Amino acid sequence: MHLKLVLSFTFLLLSQFNFCQTGGRFSFAFLDLDFSARNAATAGSSISMSTKDLNIATVNPSLLNKEMHKNISFNHGVLSGGINYGMLAYAHSFKFGTFDTYLKYNDYGEFTMTEANGNVVGNFRPFEYVFGVGFGKELNPNISVGANLNLIGSNLETYSAFGLSMDLVGTYMHLNKLFSISAIVKNAGFKIKDYTSNDTGILPADMQLAFSYKLAHAPFRFSMLIHHLNKWELGYNDPNAIPSYDALTGDTIPIPATGFIENMARHLSFSTELTISKNIQLRLGLNYLKRQELKLEERPGMSGFTMGLGFNFEKIRIDYAFVVYSRAGFNNLLSISTPLDKWRKQKKMRTITTPVF
Image (cartoon, rainbow, N blue to C red; front, side, top):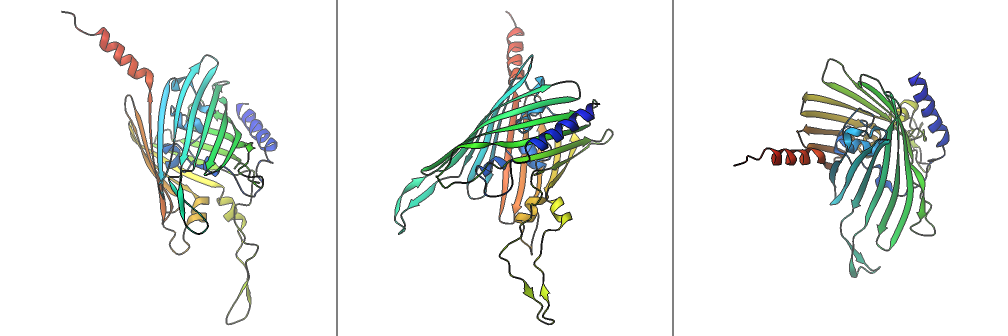
C-alpha cells in the first residue's frame, strides 16, 4: 500500500513537470553544484538515505526530522581557477514538522576589467547566491514529504539576474531503514529579472529518482541516482559535423551518434559507502554523464569519479570530498556540522557539578 502511494506520487510529479526542461541554454547553472561533501563524494546519489545529516536534507527536504533540531552546518569548496563556493545551513524542529534555512554562495574571484583596446579600467568580482527555506514532514513511518523555496541571485559585473525556484520531494523509507527511494523535482521555477533583454536562459530543472540500500549484515551502503528524467537525450550530436571517408575504400564513415545504451547510462550516478567503524566512513562514486562530457578521449583518467571520508564525533561531524572533473581540474569540498544543543547541555552540566567549598 505504501509503495503504491509513493509510486503514484512519483508519476504525478513527472507528469506535472515534464515541461520544465527541454533543452537550450540555462541560467544559474551553479545550482547543479554539490554543496554537501557527503553528497559530492557519492556523485550526488546519496540523497535518499536515512540520515541525521542536515546537509543532505538541504537537497532532499523530505529527510528533515526532529533529530536535526538546532543543527548547524558549514560547507566550503574550492574549484580550479580560484572559484570558491559553499553553504551555511540551520534546522529547527516544531510539532508539525521541521524547517531549515540555508545560504549558498558561489564566488568566482577577482577579474580584471579592460576596454576593447586592452586598457585596464578596474576590477570586478562576480558572485551568485541562493537563499532558501525548506520544510519536511513525516506523514507516517514509511512516507515523508518536503519542499524547498529558493531565491536566486547572480551578479556578473554590471549584469544581474534574479529568480525563484522550488524543489519538491517525496520519500518512501522501509521500516528497517535499510531501503529508501525518493522522487525529486529540482529547480522548477522562473526568472524574475534577466541579465539582458535578449537573455533567453531558463533554470536547470531536473527530475530525479534516488535509491539507497544498506546491507543488513555487512558495512556497505549502495546508492543510485537517475537524473534528468525530463530530458532523454543527454548526448551531443554536432549538427554541423562533416562525415569522413575511408582512405582505402572511399566509403563514408558515419558520424558517431549517442546510442540508446550510452544515453541511458548518462542518466545514472552510482556510489558505495563503507562504514569502517562507528565513526568513520569511506565513499566512492561515479557520475557517468560528467565522465563522458569532461574526459579526454585519449587519456580519460578518473574523470567523473568521486571519493571522500566521513568522521562522526560526539559533538561534531566532518565530511570531505574529492571530485575529479578532468585531468585539468578537480574539486575539494569540506563540510562541518554540529548540534548546538549538545554544547549547551554540557555547559549546563558543568555548572551543576561545580564543587562547593
